[in-house]
Length: 182
Ligand SMILES: [Zn+2]
Image (cartoon, rainbow, N blue to C red; front, side, top):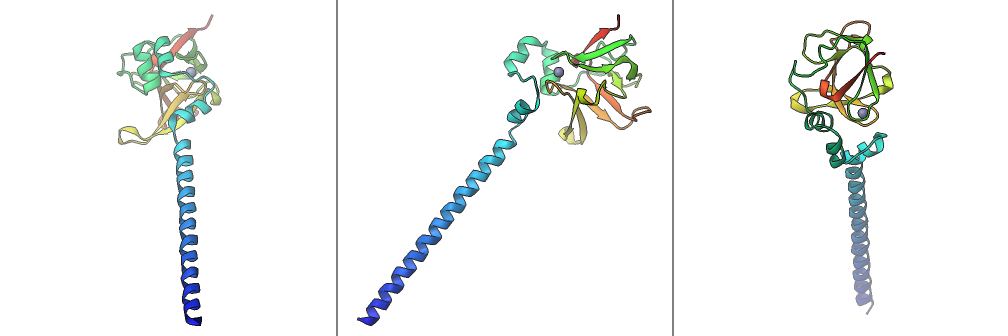
């Protein structure tokens, strides 16, 4: 009888232990899923852009406002052919604005002849006029230049520009509008 009880108790203890372990494993799995959901939620590009930029529009809204070339460059991070744009050789005095949202971005005072066939500047109007993001496309690491107000892609910035900054903001004409000085 005593022996039977002991065996019974032992068996009960074992079952309880297994149950506890199973519950623990279940919790771990649930926590893991939650973490996974949270991390994938945070890295979603669309959400990030919506939070980051003051002006946020759907692809359909942008398509209705921009030409197909502007849309391709500003919203799909395209690049126009060198020497094909209308601003690379523009030497007039004035302000270059974002073709998507109109924010003032660069001044003719910081534009220079880079010989690349794209409008080139050594400095934005204000540091806050543009946003810089790392671009790892095409097997290169480049610094992407975006409009800080709408997130429109403008071009890239390279460390081979003239003094005083040593930077070359290499932009697409189609991403810019030009407002001549009065
Ligand atoms: Zn913009």
